[in-house]
Length: 87
Image 1 (cartoon, one colour):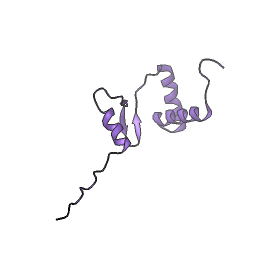
Image 2 (image 1 turned 30 degrees about the horizontal axis):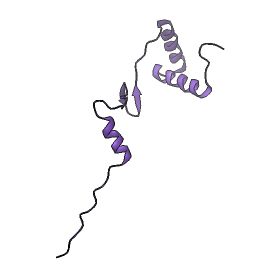
Image 3 (image 1 turned 60 degrees about the vertical axis):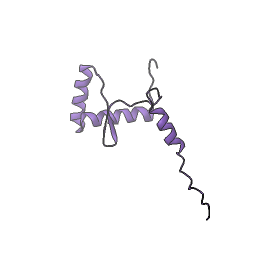
């Protein structure tokens, strides 16, 4: 009678191991806030009423939604940069 070796068990990948460890109650996994809407993440923020009024007027002039105009502005800011707290 021949002795057969047991098949090797698949070892979990490092990503799976990290996911398992981080999912523990004291893990370090950061939970994202907001709700996923398709490929985008919904967020909430507050804005000055005067700025919101101007934003709504501009979005009507441009013929785009408020959210679209905010997304355009953020993309332009990230691409071109901005100075915060000075010149």
